Amino acid sequence: AEMNVPIADGCCHCFNLHNGVMIIASFDAISGFLCILLGLVVFALPGEWEGHSFAHFLLFNEQSSLAVFTMMLVAFASIFFAGVALKGVKTLDARLLWSYFLWKLGRTCFYSLLL
Image (tube, rainbow, N blue to C red; front, side):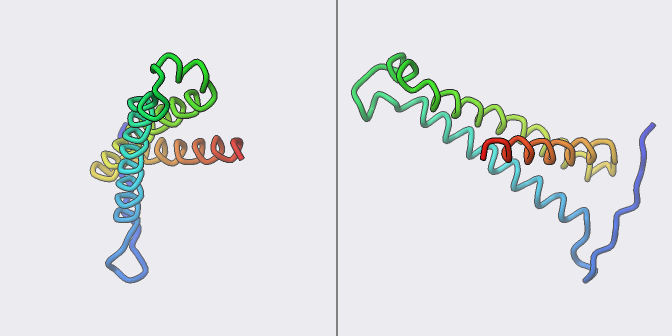
């Protein structure tokens, strides 16, 4: 059963919840693409600086390699959930918007555990 929820009005009649979710989800997708690009650069060019092979880089930089890989996984999930939010805004599906909200909450808790 699809739940259609009316869009909340903004304070100045030009900015509402629809626009806010679109902006946040778009920023989430852009930051996800940039994190994946950064991870690919880190994994593609490790031997350029030290003259060693990629296997040498992974063996002697295990923690940083794992951190970059985890960052890329979170970025893939961010892109997926940004798409879910954009589809939820377009179709006014509250279930999709709640799943995006729960992803943002879970990601925030995950990042706070890393501090």
